[in-house]
Length: 265
Ligand SMILES: [Zn+2]
Ligand SMILES: [Zn+2]
Ligand SMILES: [Zn+2]
Image (cartoon, rainbow, N blue to C red; front, side, top):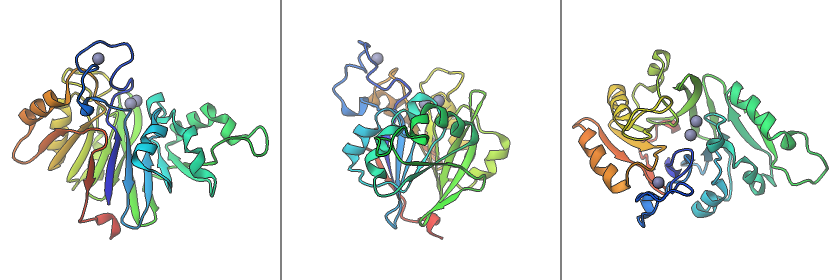
């Protein structure tokens, strides 16, 4: 299994529209952070997208996505779903299953109502099969997907686990009941908005502490704002690393490979 980070930025993306700060004006491509999204590629050719954010079209073109087998939605905030319409060209052959929790599902039904009640035959709408994620997960081809309930402020949302990798975006807390679901996770992609605390996102020190408390060996920080450049974050994260757990900022276009793919068990 391989995972490709399509976007590692916070809700407004980086650069932020109209912002003159050094990070937003940086020439380093790693300081350009699209809205948070991940592509999972299974060993059997499975293609699973987490969160079709506002830049989905550009991310898909850049990554050469020509097929999707499933879309997973963490929650229905604009930065995670507003690109859903752009899956349309990938739904010509067959409708695309989109999995979400009940709250996000209800929200998607309202915001993309036109896709579920097409106004005219042959109209330009994405063909979407909206599905409710079962608590014990789903299987997409040979890839097992396990939902992990997490907290985004007071909002319950979903993280996802694939074998020994877990993706926890927009996370400010992990309920005790979800900790067993993350047992044995080796690599964690985890929300770390910035160094300072925030009510609905982990700070980077909190993200590092969370990864360590879960026993992860690697923590990749995602959903990053414009407070720090990638280069600065490398140093700040290095200071938060320990011999047991390496902490690093993720970047758009970064890929991780999992050779020992337990999802294929
Ligand atoms: Zn977000
Ligand atoms: Zn800025
Ligand atoms: Zn959010």
